[in-house]
Length: 537
Ligand SMILES: Cc1cc2nc3c(=O)[nH]c(=O)nc-3n(C[C@H](O)[C@H](O)[C@H](O)COP(=O)(O)OP(=O)(O)OC[C@H]3O[C@@H](n4cnc5c(N)ncnc54)[C@H](O)[C@@H]3O)c2cc1C
Image 1: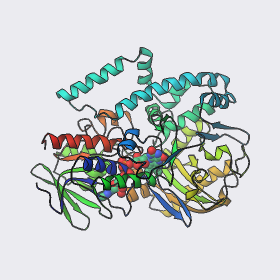
Image 2: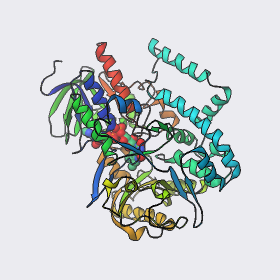
Image 3: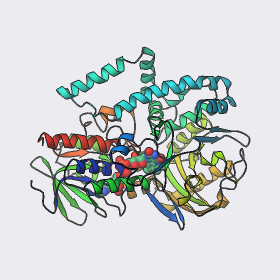
């Protein structure tokens, strides 16, 4: 099909960060690409906005570590205005009125912090770190791979490379990998640490974005998934994009447009068109038809099959498989504008201190993390939720007026849909849970509630309505064993090609999954270019 004013080589549905990355690579390869985004601003879940007069913050994703360095370099994101600074200190877990675990960077400092809870655990830390780092290194090798999808010669080669890589690991490393992929975060950590506070501190990463107890098998993998990142070349470090997460996607949008991609905002896609067994374009919500030989969905696969792909275009059983993808991450998100910094009972003072620059996690024991899940599973939301509080204005003055602050509150656990007849459509439910979140922080920092000047509250329903995050799932589908690597999004569709000729998946529902990595967009672009070059489809 020759391209005309309203036809392109590739249409990308959704201008979240993966759609932008995919578009940039495709345009750089000389393809005529248009990105179609339903919202007025690109970025999807990586976005900054003013939520209260004078106060700006990241709306959904709020911290950066997983963004792939190859993509930062190749798309020259720094040249397009992105600047990432390291969080001055990693995490802080307030425990009670007297105790808190402050986790700086560096082995000796972390050991000193842990020794306040257990000397034995402090001694274990170097070996634990080394084991996790080895596993994370393996993951880093896998992320840029297209998972093998069949027994075709190219896939066989990848299987062989993978087997070789695994067999090169020692027996002990293989056992650890098996454990990490199959066991619960609580079981995995119990083998290493005796202090409940220390175990809970590490287990937090195992339940982030996962509607699960730390005792749920598979949560050890989620813990690992949160460890494979690096900031400015330093692994395991969490960073902050100056200006908030929107600064990342603004830089990506500039890179995509500089490469020649067309970005169309307020352009919601209503239907994907198919003719003669292949994709032929899309219809927008306003009825406009845009033609293309290839369409790449940068939105959740379940959303694509549920809402955009007409029935009958792919076999019914296949269609049902996609709409049955497990999703729902159990997360709730708030931003608050603050007149002063939280005054923690265990570290008093509103003048800025080291712990104010940390990811502050309220989740002081494995029992607490477990109860947060079970009470949410029973009653819709947890009475004592797990809250991560980040105060990015302590290291980014552009976000709040001088002397005042913004806080991101990332909260687990809530049910994606409340038990009937209750619903997230009911503003009273949302307000009641937001109040639980504030009360939870207030227990540790009693000035918190009275310092709030304004707030933004996003339930799972809001996340779905604003960004298309189906069931409020921050990863476009759970990171569970049956939905990883060559099973992501489904067995047989792991190579970014969906079961309709010319239709691709290029966002978090594809390998290696969610988080602001850019990797699904990068990998899918490579596969699309291969198909174009080989004249396939
Ligand atoms: C509350 C929250 C906190 C998070 N915290 C972090 C974090 O701190 N660090 C981290 O690395 N990751 C975090 N994540 C995960 C991360 O943000 C996501 O995995 C990632 O941003 C997804 O990017 P994406 O490009 O794959 O898709 P998305 O960002 O979801 O983009 C999809 C795009 O498709 C658009 N769209 C949907 N339907 C249509 C349609 N019909 N037509 C046109 N466009 C459409 C949407 O508007 C959106 O722009 C968080 C996510 C959430 C929700």
